[in-house]
Structures are given as structure tokens and as C-alpha cells.
Image 1 (cartoon, one colour):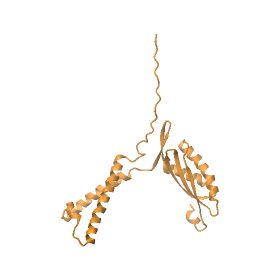
Image 2 (cartoon, helix red, strand yellow):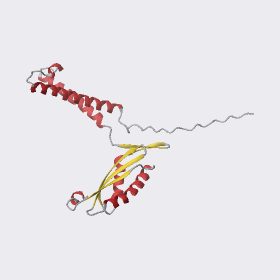
Image 3 (cartoon, helix red, strand yellow):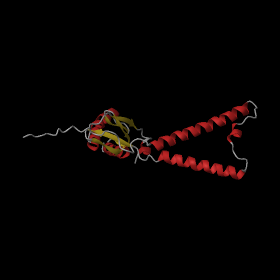
Image 4 (spheres, helix red, strand yellow):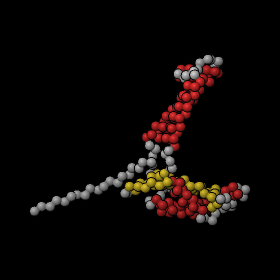
Amino acid sequence: MWCSRRSRLAQTPDRRPPRGVAPSRSTRIATFVLLLAGGLFVLLYAMRLTAVAFHCEFSPFRYLGIPADPALRAWSLLAVVVVLGVLILLVLRHGEETIWIAGDGGGVLAPSAAVAAALEQTAAEHADVVRSEARVEARRDGPAATLTAYLRPYADGVRVAADLEPRLSARLAAITGVAPGAVTVRPRVLGARQLKRHLP
């Protein structure tokens, strides 16, 4: 009589960011083509302006095969505009900026703007904070946040920053489910004349 045991191999969690976290290949190619086209355009005009500066009749545009007929030139220009528009759409379609937070069992994809808004709401609960601006990003040691807090006149910026940093760190940990990295508060004490501009 015999029996066999199947050894259960430990599964390796997939820590790769899902599609949409990093720019796609088409986005990178479109960005490269736009940069290349812009560089060539600037180079051609630099050559032409240099020739004009030295009183030379040289023009690189003569060798581009641009048709002399005005109608053909218009259609060619329209085609170039359409191609550039498509490339710009490919570059801009990446969408909302997100942060990928890797964990033991995979990870979570979170919109950084929503996380930043939650941190700003937490900062607004402090009596000395008039307005705040937060930025969240993913780092190797965990999600990190930087919050600029605009404080009422004569407030103690060091004390407010010391009060806010643990609160924001706890809120960021509650949202992401992982221990956050650096959470930095940059206090900006407003003057009496600046206060009106920063009021909500």
C-alpha cells in the first residue's frame, strides 16, 4: 500500500504593475515621434535663420519635396496636422495619474488625485490650516506624500507640521493598507494680506 503526497509549492505573487500604471508602448512611441518631429522642425528653421544671418540664399526646405501648387501644399499641411493630432491624442490618453502599491499578495492601483484629496481633507480638520495641497507618489519604501499647508497668520508652522504628519501618515496607511513611506508637511504661514486669496 502506498500513498503519494503532492507538495504545494509556494506561489510567487505577481508584483508587476497592471496595464495603465506605466505608459504603453504606443504612448512612448508617439512621444518619441513628437519629440523627433519637433527637433527636426527647430533644426530646419535654425539652419534657415543661420543662412539669412550670413546673407546666404540656402534653404533646407527646398530639399523636402514640398509641392509648389498651393492646393497640394494645403492638403499636405492638413495631413501633417492630422498626424500630429493623432500623436498628441496617443500621448494624452494615458489618463489619470495613478500609484501602484505592491503588497504581499499582489497590489492595488489607486488614483493619486483621490488619495491626495483625502489627505487634504484630513489636513483641513486642523484649526490652523486654511488650505492645503497634497501630492502622493509610490516609492520603494511605500507610498509617500508631500502636503503644503497654508496656515492662518501667526500660526506656529513647526507645531502644525508635527501635528499633521502622524495624522496624514495614519490616513495614508488606512487608505492604502500598507505602511507609508515619508510623509512631509511643508507649512506656509500666511500674512494678513495673503489670507483672503487662500480662503476657500
